[in-house]
Length: 152
Image 1 (tube, rainbow, N blue to C red):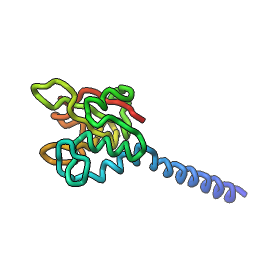
Image 2: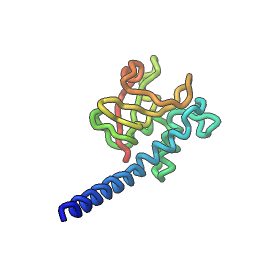
Image 3: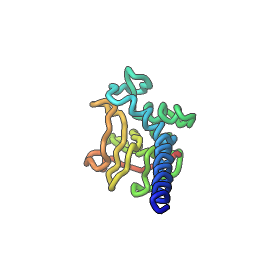
């Protein structure tokens, strides 16, 4: 009887694992998957295709794929959602940056793809390397960082 009981409890725990695997298809995961389809695509100001795309274009299309409408420009996107601390950043959140030395306004956005052990990774389009994944711990991005926002 004890063996049967152990077998039954092990079956129910595996069902829990399967149930948790279903959570990997969350809206955030779908948005991230869409954005990562553009990895390696060259940068094009105002672009929204696989021939060329910019940072806000990726976010705009990725969220749009889940019927979430955002403004097309990063500084306007930054006015949406709810500001959050870096400690509370989750997959699907947006990071905003000021990368221009003279103009001191938000001009860049990245989409958080992971936050593990304090390491925040995000997908975005750079003018020099196209669509890439970067870490917020990189000095350039850490210095340019302005705020994080939850949309979902």
